[in-house]
Amino acid sequence: MTAPDQDFASLRTTSEAHHAQLLPHVDRLLSLAEMVGHVECTSLHPMFEDEYSFIVGQLIPHMETIERTLYDRIEAELSGHHSLAPMREEHRTIARLVAELGRYRDHADECTWSAMEGMALRRALYRLHALLKVHLAEEELYLDVLERNLEDAEKDLLARSLGHAMAEVL
Image (cartoon, rainbow, N blue to C red; front, side, top):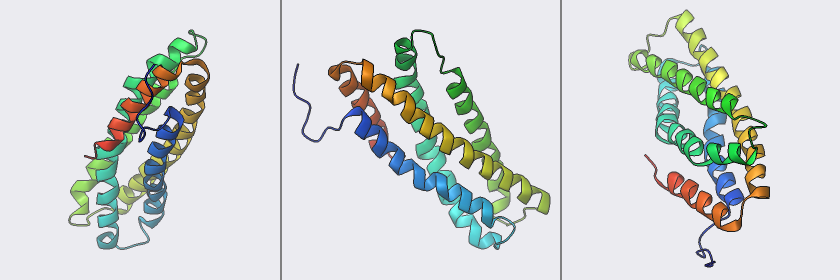
């Protein structure tokens, strides 16, 4: 077995660093939701655009990488006793909520959200925030399964895959 690169982090450290990059943006979704209807759209729009860009450029690729890299391996370790189907379904729900947010971008340029659209936007932001907070915390729990059951070499390989995914800022 070869020694890991000096700048290489463990699977746990890589995942925690990854989530540390995601969580401030997730928390901004709550701030955005609370601003809708209380702050002028022209003030809200730049923050909305920044967070939407982060979501589609980082969060969605994170989701896809985690599912592709870790989920099958976790399910194999759980020997069919627990399925990650609910986590995959949450990924689909997150994608639907992001698509819903994308529809509001059309109105944001001219700040033409109606009161009803503003309420729907707030609801989508609140739902996305809540779902992501719980989902990311649950991912950490599943990571424990891998930490306890995989050989170091396999954990290193998974960590490298995650590390490469986060290094590619879109």
